[in-house]
Image (cartoon, rainbow, N blue to C red; front, side, top):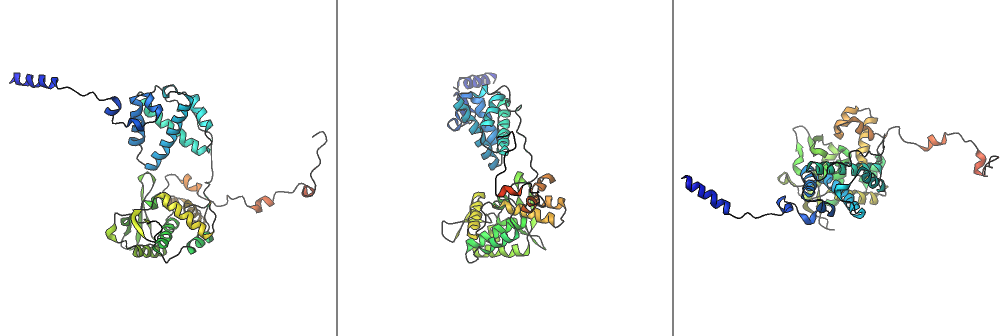
Length: 354
């Protein structure tokens, strides 16, 4: 019996083992990797994909981080600088070369910092060169998204036709933005089953950033718009797992079973703005700003508004508050006029100056 087992082990030892190249053994798609990663070796490629496709689950975050990292790797290629030789000074020079806003540069630095952390963990590089590079100082007391006024919102809704299913869809989608304070991504993720009746009222169940869930009661006027759209589109409770807001079939006034993406909703909103003759600077996020500002103006507690907006920190909610922070012309006109004659003749130079 022992001889049989020994024979089995000997036979097994004689079976040739196929040697798989490093990147194939790691399951990496070598042709898809940036040149700088391929040159850095197998461990670098593994860390690159581990970070982007294993660690990051949000597709929008992954897209932004991957674009930032690949842009840096392309810069390295242009500088003929290997990944293993990147120093803090190189990272600083790269960030200084970016013609981007400070918040965008902070996103790039964050992406690179996490990327190099994984490179260090997999022993592709020795140290993280980004960790000692500081961000530029940037502080805001108010966000930049413009608030949509009540007059502008009424004008926008009034310009949407109610005679087509596409018009009913657009009006209902914009009304959800207006009456829930939601982000456009959360509206795009809505399914038919997310419109729920809880005995005494209808609610919309949103999935926000970071996988956070919240329920928002549906107002009576929003309820009429939603069910008017659903009836015209032929969407019933049996379509529970299908998207709530569906894309149109080309230029036909009919809807498909595919859901509208964030970009679809953005384009639809911009198209409706143009038709209503409203400023193109407005965006779907303008309704979120308006909802928070108006509720705070009415004296609703900051904690309740923060809960509606699903913000983890009340300081984030305050960034949306546009009350008493506008520099109006009335304020500027109150600055004393020091020389009225400047309007008719230029000031004469002071003696000794040229």
